[in-house]
Amino acid sequence: MTLSAGRGGGALVAVGTGIRIVGQLTTEAIAWMRRADRLLYVVNDAVAEATIRGLNPAAESLFGLYAEGSPRHRTYLAMVGRILDSVRAGGVTCAVTYGHPGVFAWPIHEAIRLARAEGYPATMLPAVSAEDCLFADLGVDPARHGCQSYEATDFLLHRRSVDVASDVILWQVGAVGDPNYHAGDYDLSLLPLLSERLARIYPEGHLGYVYEAAVHPGADPYISPVPLGLLHQARLSSSSTLYIPAARAPEVDAVVRDRLEALASGPFREPPPAAGPREPSDDAPSATPGGRAPDRSSRQL
Ligand SMILES: C[S@@+](CC[C@H](N)C(=O)[O-])C[C@H]1O[C@@H](n2cnc3c(N)ncnc32)[C@H](O)[C@@H]1O
Image 1 (cartoon, rainbow, N blue to C red):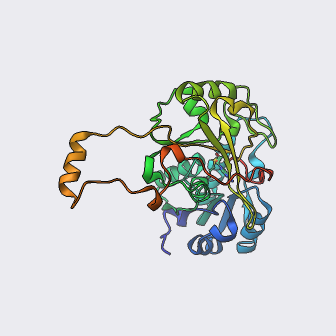
Image 2: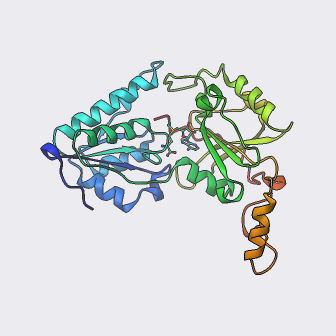
């Protein structure tokens, strides 16, 4: 573990707890959390909070910077300011978020960028994100069809294009169209626009899956299939992520296929389904423990 002190002795390291801190917190992250002179964290899960405070009694939550109904971006700027103030004060600052500290976590990227611009060493450790949990729980391998990943409001606002022969993951679908923070329900008045948009892109009846990884060990993930055109009727929370399986097989470039066949010792074959994930027509995750209520203990960063 090396991070030499920069100007005035300050340094920044950003770590993530994983989605499920029990089991997903790495030994490297633990070492930094223990070593830090100041630890600033954003988690909203009692087990994660107790674990962090146990590792570093000086740990300070930034969660209180959220204010009901106020723009999340304003809170993010305040978080960046708090992290930078701590770095400038000297010693090692450890910034801790749930999941991966650099996945859908603008304040951490911004804090690292600004710290470096001011001459302080700053680094980020990788961690287990919601997408990593999704791949495991839904049995999805992004190598099979490819995988496009979008923030839901960005997808809608910028009319992002979709390759329907690829899987799609929409993040923050339970907060689509609402730039403000809410401890409870988000204003989903723009959600029907997302349903309409997806219904225009995908064949009628094509299913998406509302997914919430379990935050606590032993709990099941929440996996609920929904026809994309009816997404606005689905039960969503701020922890929901939408997974949309590929809707058709990809086109084949005959020239490339012929070259691959020439290089292969026999006819070129894509991996059989048994050796990897399912065919597009069989893409539906089979496990749908819909009887379980979603675990709502993790929130927006
Ligand atoms: C601000 S992002 C934070 C992502 C986090 N840094 C990570 O590495 O996964 C919040 C979004 O992450 C996704 N997310 C967070 N917790 C989740 C969970 N338990 N299961 C599925 N998706 C989750 C949702 O799309 C949610 O709206």
